[in-house]
Structure formats: structure tokens, C-alpha cells
Length: 111
Image (cartoon, rainbow, N blue to C red; front, side, top):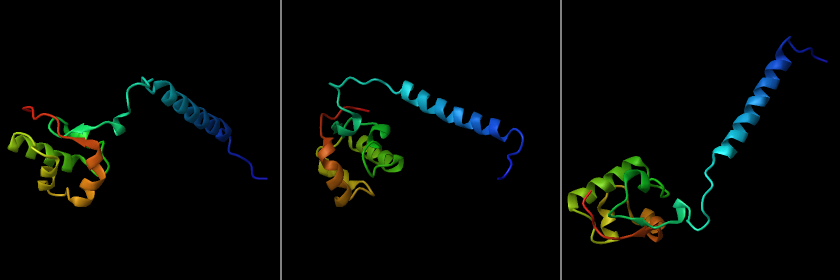
């Protein structure tokens, strides 16, 4: 049987304890959400009001693409239809097919 270095058991125990504490802390700090409020990933996204951060909740939309969408919306004074999003470079038919069910037109509001 191989001998452990002096102090190795103490280090291993400390690491184990740290992992357990981090795990417990994550569980304790998770917000308790109201069951009547749907999670963000199932809510509709208003294309005329969504921020860059809100766009990134959608699958396949990163911060760069989200920034392009918001810039085009500002330049156009809002979107008149969801289909206008396809004017954004990187937002083609395939990606639109995936995210369209999550989008709503809403009312154009100045940014």
C-alpha cells in the first residue's frame, strides 16, 4: 500500500469540504421563483423592446447578433413585422424558424 504524504489527507478533506460548501451555497442562493411567473426561456420576446441581454436568452442568438438586431431596430425606428429580422446578417430562415415561436411584434417604442 502506498503511503500518503504528511498533510495530504488534510488537504483532501479541505477540498472536499469546500466542494460541499459551494454546492450548498449555490442551492441556498437560487431565487425562489413564483410558480405563476413563467421562466424567461418560455416567455415571448417583444422584438421592438428587447435589450441585447434579453435577445441572448434565445437559442443561437449571441451578444454580437443581438447587438445587430438592436442596432437595426434603432435605425429603422422599430420593426413592422417579425420577418424584417431576416434583414440582420446572421439571422436566416433556419434560425428564424427556431426562434419565431418565441417572438412577438408588440408596439414599437423609441429606444
